[in-house]
Length: 296
Image (cartoon, rainbow, N blue to C red):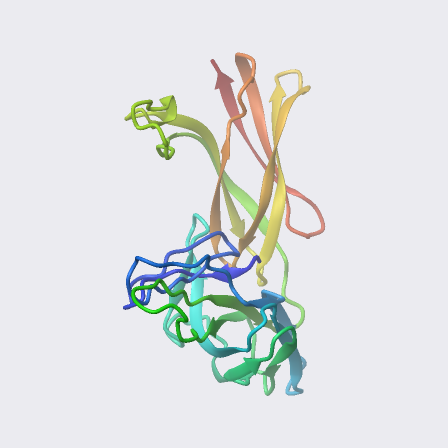
């Protein structure tokens, strides 16, 4: 889950996403003349926590902060709502505004902590009085390292790192279910690659260049968040396997749809194929979709 981190400018602004699980927030404090290699001092584990309620009984959980540096680190814990758009981007929202937050049902302690060099501390989570909960809720807790005073005089570049821990709370007995709702062949624009030799423009950077992909829309029809993975099979009309491509792990929130894009493999011989998408999300059986494809 991928480490969930985010990046935004020092004076505010929208947070840019990273992968489903990893983003890094670097806040630029002052200047650009002197900089040091940035690395987070705190390791946070785990990065996703699932808590299953037990009526009104208290359910505990936790995550740890490990200081890998030779200096003490001060950190604060803040809370936000979040959701995920169809292409997998995380979107962070003010606490209590999404309608999917666990609210006062979920507590965290402490909100400020000091971690001595080469030691670890525990952040405690708790859920209680949850007998009324009928569906899954979720929040994200950001662990933000408080920046130390710069040791270098004059202009310098300072970074603040924060790591997000996604916490899901659900009552027992919710279903795990999903379906492939649609597949399509799409020609998508190629993003120009960075080049150290501007005089040589790679073919992929040619204006108007596209690549062919298979899009798969996976719908989480159950009540719990899912983690899916699988494969894309290119089968000849006699049902023999020509090529297959892995579908890397992807998360989907309950009730949501994810659009997964898979490159058509190079080297596929010209001809007609049936493309099968097979996805395993931990349910009783795989779910599948198919589409016809003609390679030229």
